[in-house]
Image 1 (cartoon, rainbow, N blue to C red):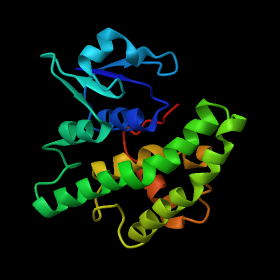
Image 2: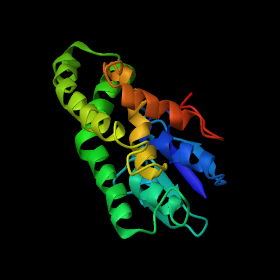
Image 3: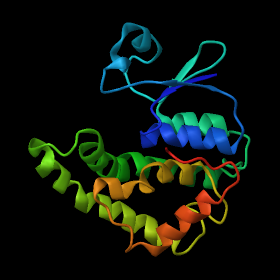
Image 4: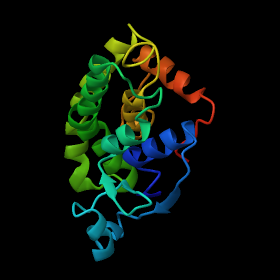
Amino acid sequence: MKIYADIQSGNCYKIKLLCSLLDIEHEWIHINILEKETHTQEFLNKNPNGKIPLLELEDGRCLSESNAILNYLSEGTPFSSTDTFNKAKILQWQFFEQYSHEPYIAVARFIAKYLGMPDDKQAEFKSKQSGGHKALSVMEDQLSKTQYLVGDSITVADISLYGYTHVADEGGFELSGYPAIKAWLKRIQKYPKYISME
C-alpha cells in the first residue's frame, strides 16, 4: 500500500505511527502541501478533496481522512475494539479530535510553524488559544481517570489525539498545567516501535 503524506503534519504522522506500532508495510510518498502537490490532477484523481493523508491500497482503491484510515488499518487489532460501545467511544474521541481539538491546536501550530507567524495571522493565532485549552482540559479530565482515552489500553483514539497534542507547544499551548496528558504522552512514547515525528 502507498501513503501520500507529510510526516510534519499531525494528521499524517498519526498514520505513520500506527503503521510502525502494527508493523504495517507501506510506501511513504512525501507530499508538499505548500507547493500545492495535492492540487495536481493526478492527486485529485485519487482524492478529489485535495488533502493528505491519503491511503492507496494495492488494488488501487483510495481512502482519505486520517481517522478513517486509522480505523481501517486498526480493524481486527488491539488498537480497535469488538465491543460496540467501546468502538463508539473511540469514534467519539476521533470526532472530538477533528471538531474540538484540531481546529484550534493544529491551526495555531500551522500558523506558527508552517507560516512563520505573519502579522496578518497573529489575531487568528491568539483566537485559537482558548478553544485549544478547552480541548486539552477535556482530555486532562479523562486521562486523570483512565490510563488511555478509552479505558486502560491504547486504541486509535489515543493515536488520533496524540498526533497534534504532543506538539501542542509549537502552537503556543504549554502543557505543564496538564500532568495527566504529560504522563499519557510518555506512556505512548515508551511503546515498542514508537517513532517520532522527526
